Image (cartoon, rainbow, N blue to C red; front, side, top):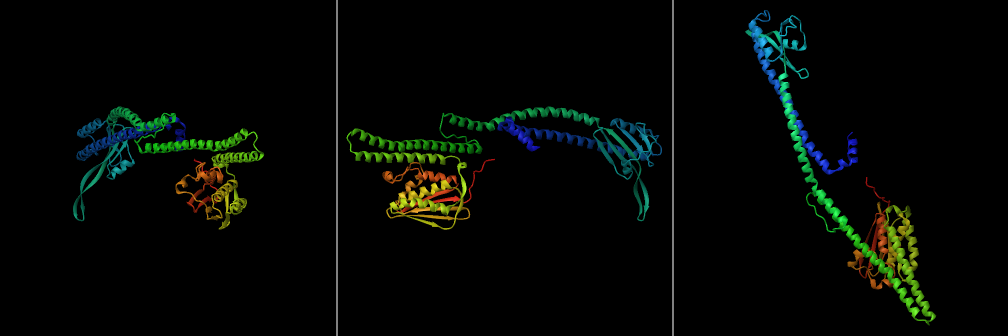
Length: 495
């Protein structure tokens, strides 16, 4: 039942408002105790009034019971004094009094209805046993009491003469509670008026408090809308509550992230423009040189055309890498996961790259610690290994070496690529994964590449929920360590 109500509240937009919920909570907290207190006071008054009325009547009945014994009324009910007392008691409390003798017969009935009849009930029998009983019938509006009529007699015991109370009869009395009910009706009317006034006051307070309590959230919304509309890019601050601070901090972090992404995008566009423009500029210079020399020899044409071809290849490589990087930025769902033997894959990639290494007199060593089988995208893993090993070869020294170590534990496998090359300066380590970043820009054209290799590698590693770290010393070499889970970890969807 509660689950259904909760579902309804979530579907109805009105109840999803924090202000409305606060209003309802404050009203509930204020009105419920008020109603409960009023109800408790009325019940307490009723029980107290009934108790006082019962005690008062029981006291008078006990006095009357003594008079009944004194005047021997159970044997002779002609006493005018007792009759007057019974009539006065009956009229005073708007009730009925029955005097029952020892044989359970009614000696006197103030209503003159049951006189002479026999009455046997649980209350009467218990009263003959010496108990004084009372019962409040709220439905019919009367209090019923049974009082034993006792006489003290002297009896002889082993220790001598003693007094003993003997029940001679029972008084069965019913008294009206109309006066109590009338007073309660009057009090109820006043209580309802008081409750209505209290509810009005509580609702007013609830409206004011809910407005005050939700005002900081309105300021947060207004500040965010101002940023969204483009009127401001400054960080917002609403320190009223811890909750608003957390929301604002999260938004400011998001704003900072957006600014960083925007700056990165602008820088990326500028870098792309520059990288694409450079080969085009070189080709234009070469072409203009040929056009200005009408009688240029064939050898010069061939040399310039070879240079133009190299620039075209360079342009094509930049575009290819850019497309690869764009594909890397897509969702992880684009991964084509399969079970791959990493030892065989690494050996295959190194086999393709060894001819390039031999041209630079660089030795490529592969050390497999143990057999490794992992759930990965084979194409992207090939790209990771190729980029790292190819960089290690390109930036190596003459007669240097590249060492590739493959290892695994029960959760991750690691690929370590170390070289004896020129190394990376410490101030450049945090920038090497940036797009188009080159450590040694003066030799970038000699070495080749587009400056996108490590950016592509890092994206591929992150798509596998892995990590890539680097350790390097300038003029001594670099070591890249890639760690990737053996079992593919898919994206967890939020519930």
